[in-house]
Length: 314
Image 1 (cartoon, one colour):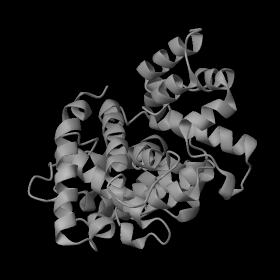
Image 2: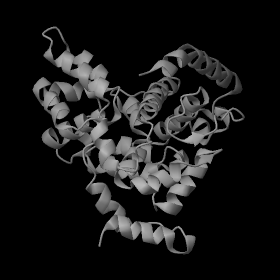
Image 3: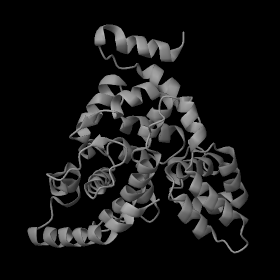
Image 4: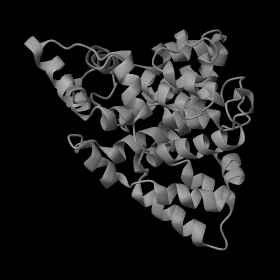
């Protein structure tokens, strides 16, 4: 039986939306092809790799602009060098690039289809706003790091940036793996992100956070990043990495509020404030009022400073 036909039948039967089974979801996500990189980033990387004057730091900086390429680099370095030992997993792109070497990075680029090929694979997902997805991902990564810099928790590697960059990867997996269901969800307009999450759970069975977390876990990304991404919309449910999950939630919200919305047909949250978010309370709820004011001033100054950059990304 064709999986897509059975899904369509399930959804059309008397107009009822029946979520997919965990077994089917896992099976299809496991079969998801390698994710595409933005072609302009591939071209830039190729130029750097062909240059005698390039440094690993420059190459890593370009890789950090691409959620899918970041995923593949970390997956490859951890699966080759560190197996399944979580405590030794690499989360930094530059460190991973050093381990892999330039030839292996070049192979990764050459072996990965560009966006147009993935769009053909997705068939019905032609309207996926790829550039908007990447722009929002990069903006959230930058702000996740900026927000965590205001806390007492420090990240010696790049787990903060990588987690912010990959927080919505599940949406891309959904678009590729279940294009019809993706279209049904993301062609609709909602006032709140929570409405999209509810639709994902009702129609698919898992929301994009769980889909992305499972995909990343299956590709050797550290538990720290996987758990934070899984719970970035509900950070209080994270058992071990609430601060990172909370920072992603706040960063995602602020990135949308300044107009870098991503792919959702969702109104900009102009009537809400990041101070009301669960993630903000996790990060700064126990601070004294005077300290909170200083933190808010610093963050608002940061937002004002980097907003033009975020809007102009890609």
